[in-house]
Length: 226
Image 1 (cartoon, rainbow, N blue to C red):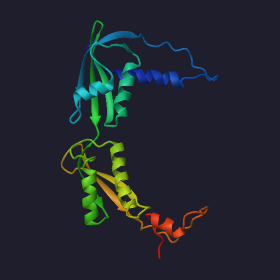
Image 2: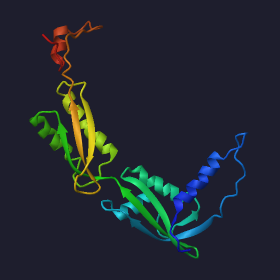
Image 3: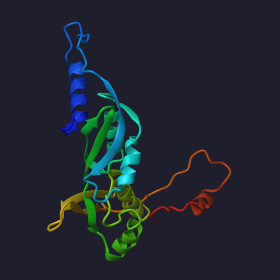
């Protein structure tokens, strides 16, 4: 068989039929599943990877040359889930390019998330921007794919920076804009809303019978507003 077949689509269509084609009693009707055949993976080609390592894609997929798989079976959908779980790709598809007797030739095609061209921080002082840029450069590396978790972690760094300065209600919004003259890249803009410092008007202690109030206040980092 030499036709290029999108294995995952065929298998998922079957799952959809089994999941939704129920009768009035709520039980699944009898559906004859397609013939399941066991193949040995002869080769795996990777397509669409510009920034990701092909070796890493193969390792993360869980598929390897010499492995026995069933078609249709669970191995291909699971490989797609494994790759989508790392949140570096917009889309993952696995094709069966051809078969020779009991050997199957596979192709993994990925559509990568855009890479980071640059990032910027708005609505803050120059000195604050310089401090945060140094901290964020360890997590937002230009020319690499930035996952959602890395983006959220960067927001957390900005929030904690201003919380230490007394801006406890600080908000950080992110905006992504595609590059004007380059494909598959974007810029991230962090918009900061400080919302004013939170000031403590008074500190009250209850249940204390041993240490003086003056001593307790002296030990605290936060002081009451005079």
